[in-house]
Length: 302
Image 1 (cartoon, one colour):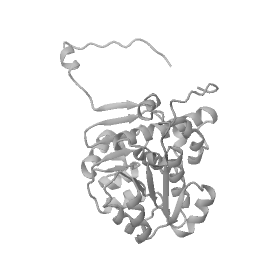
Image 2 (tube, helix red, strand yellow; image 1 turned 45 degrees about the vertical axis):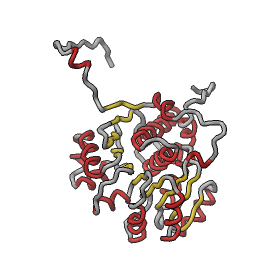
Image 3 (cartoon, helix red, strand yellow; image 1 turned 45 degrees about the horizontal axis):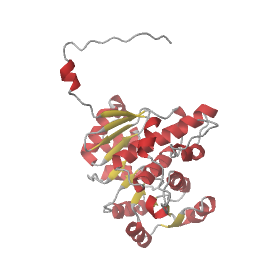
Image 4 (cartoon, one colour; image 1 turned 90 degrees about the vertical axis):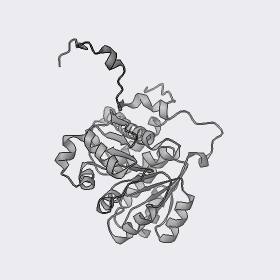
């Protein structure tokens, strides 16, 4: 690799350039302290968000469990999981801090009345079981995160909402816009803007160089993460992180940006120690807690 000096000339446009602003911002781990200040010493669990996470059809308990634990590890005060009945006992056994119940119309109605934030999609599936839950959640007027099969179902019945964070990977984005994955990847910034225009709220277009776009026109590029994150479950973890930050009173755009940076930085810390190949989504929990406490100085490793 070579380096040298970079020269430029403003061509007499200095004054005009000084008056221009760009909606595009690069976000990295250095920004986490701005989003995640130290907690008030007298705070309690009710101050940090009551989340309900919906999903985990038969055979996909892992997705909803990872999403729930990610929310806890990112500082959520209380997390309730509604899932398929066969998943309840295994999830409670491995992570007893989660409140887990069977997803029924009655439990969903009660949970929505209780919750500050809803995340739906991980392991949801596309059977009537999941479609019915999504129809109920659609009317929730507090912050939401939609991921995975919630996005695939949204593609069949598009609507526009302002209180929602969508987190598609390129394949899901292609279905949402009815285009090819190649078209999504050929202009990721434009694709994110098109998704926001059609569906409203905030969009996180995942991938190498994750893009976050909002209805206000603000756009962020996430400078964190690595190839080790190309493995199953990483998206479920991200959904839990963003939902947790929404519950801690970040705006949807800030929660999306901060969540993506924390997710990527947790993976970068793992990769620096052990490499990228073989990284699992649950491995991030070992570094995520440290990442979401940027005020802490680790004298041994920082």
